[in-house]
Length: 303
Image (tube, rainbow, N blue to C red; front, side):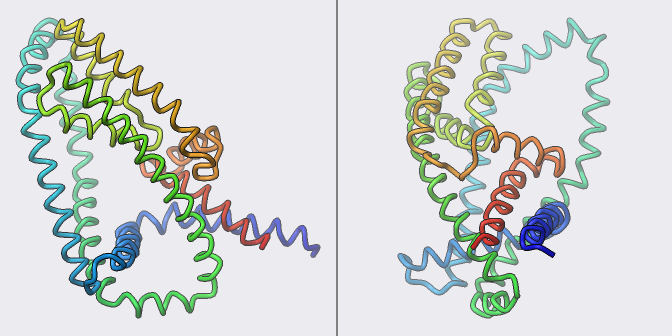
């Protein structure tokens, strides 16, 4: 067998291994994978916080749970008044088109029943993640020593290190863009007299930083709702704010991201589309992750 043919077989083996990993192993082991990343982050935090790993893990999880609870409480409190205002509008449209919308309650109830097993599995996965963080923090050195004995640990570790370095650069750039867009939204929301403008500005910036998503996910439904309520001036100013934030990202992204994650924009979009087709909603993140992993493992073959 020639060297070139052997290399092609190795690359095909990597493609198959990554596909099987993303298709079968990662969904099952996602809580453990996230716990591993969390403990890695806690080890990094130990450089500044002089605390043993297990107490640090407990404090980290407690802070995360408190922040999530506070965020849910704030969101419910802030959404109460807009929902109260929107209910009469929905009732008006329902009374006009009720004969054409009778299928909505049946479809919605069927959808909710179908989603119940998924919700329960997510809750169980969150529980497994919390327990796994504590166990890994307790026996971190022993677990790391066992993994280092695996035959493929070294190349995968090097590839993961390069991916982590690229991701850190991408995350820093996205953080800077998110701060600018959040500041623009805060000014706009303040001028539009939106209550708790700072909270909605931060939320808009976070949504804009997600892959594929953008501020349009927030502003387009908002504009439609304002039009339905007859607030045409408000909808116009929201559309202007959408244009400003979109132009800001288009201007800053190429200057701050540079090479980004090492994928061309069209390649990143294709990886997301293929990931969604192969892995469902989970493919939004596993698609680009899989392409980056294949790219770095192929680089290990060259090395």
